[in-house]
Amino acid sequence: MTTNSVNYIEPTTEELSEGVRLRRRKRAINFAIDVFLIVVSILMLLPLVFLVANAFKTPAEMLSWPPTIIPRDPTLANFSAVLGETPLLRWIGNSIAFAVMSTIAIVATSAIAGYIFGKFRFRTMNILFALFLATAIVPFEVYMIPLYFQAKSLGILNSVWGLLLGYLVMSFGIFLIRQNVIHSIPDELLEAARIDGAGEFWIFLHIVLPLLRGALGALAVLAFFQAWTAFAWPMIVATTRTSYTIEVGLALFQTGFTVDLGRLSAASATVLIPSILLFVILRRNFVQGVASTGLKE
Amino acid sequence: MLKRKRWIFAILAILPTLAIFAYVRLYPIADTLRLSLFKWDILSKNKPFVGLANFRELMGDHLFLDALVNTTIIAFGVLILTIPMALIIAALIFHRTRSRMAGFYETAIFIPHVVSLVPAAMAWKWIFDARLGPLNALLTFFGIPAQSWLFDPVLSVICIIVLCSWQALGYAVLIYIVGFKNLPVSLYEAAKLDGASGPQSFWYLSIPMLKPITLYVSVVTLVSGFNVYAQAFVLASDAQGAPGRQVRVLVLDMLENSFRNYRVGYAASEAVVLLVIVLALTLIQFSMLRERGKA
Image (tube, rainbow over all chains, first blue to last red; front, side, top):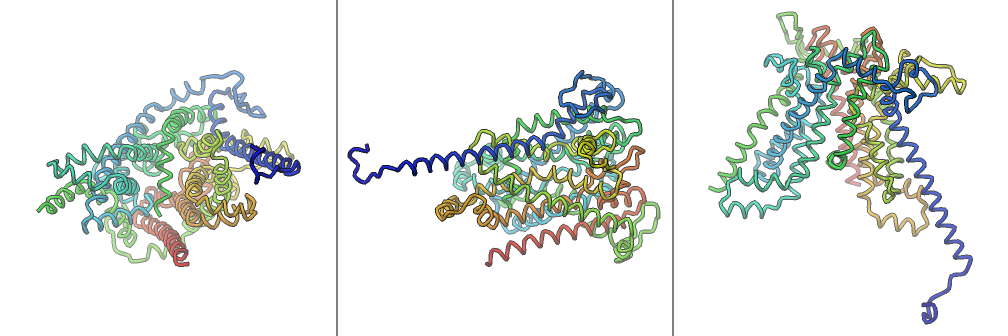
């Protein structure tokens, strides 16, 4: 190659060593960035790692310094003590029932409303959509007290239904599905189906829903975690020991007088481990959903 | 004719959702506004209209003002801690986006945002614990006297800020990474040709270009900061079962007025104050975005 190319200028040794030096510098910088990010990541996870570790520790080991990450003689005593003292499994069951039902309700209402707002843009519909969007700004905490009295008059306090009342619709979900409908469902497709004589409901069920699978999946994960981590609403609606969600149960359990950190950690770990696993499995869906919250400006 | 049929379908399909929405959203929001103008106590039969008397009383209510100050400090504390850190971490993760570790960084930093509030707060309660906690052990190791983190009114506010920032960071980083991915690559290449270093193009290109994202994340962080409740409940409750005595926050004060003192109208007026704060923050965001659009 060098023999017959006239314009090719042989790099001098200085230039070559300069290139090597730059490349080495770049690699060193990247290495430093990686080290920094690994340290940050570990620091972020450390509290949770310790929590899980503490759950398996004996009271004596809890006091030792420096704290161990892998317990020296792991014990399940904390877990059996917690399960004996509290209806922990019942609380987890309540939370799961609440989160699943809320997810179904939010996915169903968002799918229908998102489709209608995306494809049936009559003036009435646009006004309604603006109304949905405008109330999205109002935090739940602002209107939960009147909502509590509505639940009370329906006679559904201390039940999953009462919990569900606060988490039936999600303005952001409707917005998310509407965006997806507008961008990924062509009008021509719907028109073609109509010309073939398909009914509107059939179109929604057999054409629109399958095309929205990805967005609905992301929304489902968001909705599930939203209900799973809800605190203020379950706190006022579920006030009997058997109706607590796991969050409320744990929060009240930790105010008890005789409770030690080992048992608290065991109870917390029982909740944390499955939800972290679930998150890691559904990470892509979740990240997609959350990331799209940032794009709504 | 066809259009009419479609219109009927649309109305029928939207009706159930609309009904639910009206019942669980619109009505309670309107009710909050209405109740705030009434002396609406659960125990008394008369629930007279009192105009703005509730709000006037709020202005002289020590517990409320205490809660308002604490909540504001927490919200802005979280903001000041979270935004710069998130921006830098997101920039670095974006820089290393092609490395195999990028997924790990994102997941590790995001996990605190998704785990349930109460168990996560429990982990921090142990860290801050005066007797057993590793934080004090670490401090004494460096010869700094141990602090009773969760019992001192000032320190416990700091603890809540740290906990909330730890949770808010992952969300902010995620949104910033999306922002970085949407920035035009050509601009950075041009800057590089002009001899700009990495930190320089971060400072002079990324930060100004990401301003809308910064505004959005700031408002989201502030709003969730003003709604802080679970974190204060878990961290600042003592063993005797008197939760939230140490650090009063707005939501706690509101719930106490409503369910312990049975003063629902008064609590509703607190909710209206919270709403006004949130609306003001959102309006500031929009007007700043619009200004940018004009310029």
